[in-house]
Length: 167
Image 1 (cartoon, one colour):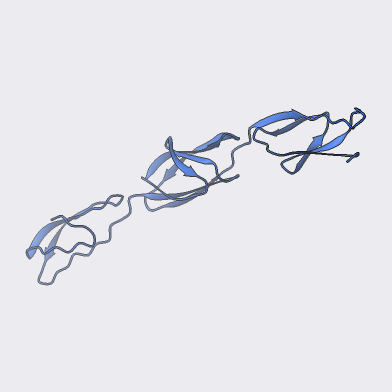
Image 2 (cartoon, helix red, strand yellow; image 1 turned 90 degrees about the vertical axis):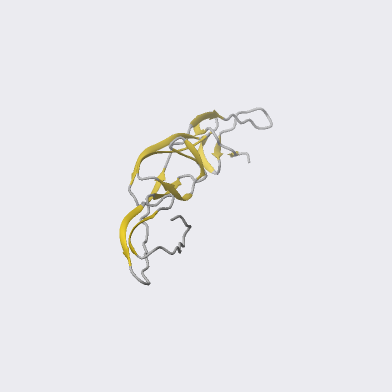
């Protein structure tokens, strides 16, 4: 007999085969004896695991088994038990990933920390007289070095500020 949960279905008394199933749950199929007023009440076992994915930095794209699943932080991704390929990536970071083995009913939390893709800049500064000026170079609020040096920065650096002795 088919019905949705909660399921209420009258069955003839006696020994009957009863099957219950839901997507993402382990099917239960047993022979039961129904007596006057008898009720079959089963709790089905989850047939999935949950995965929470974080990254440092946040807001990186998540691929699970090659499929885009959104951006970090992601919580409550349903997975079938077994091995899965997890990866985070962005235009500013090298892809970072790992194989995750999850078991039925497990909740796993992972944090991935991909490396920033580097770039280099050299900043030159002159004063109003055309003379070279040594000054501090800040990229995205962090001091990276001084003018006339080759400085390592993120390929996605956004803000450059030069602070020198001449103001």
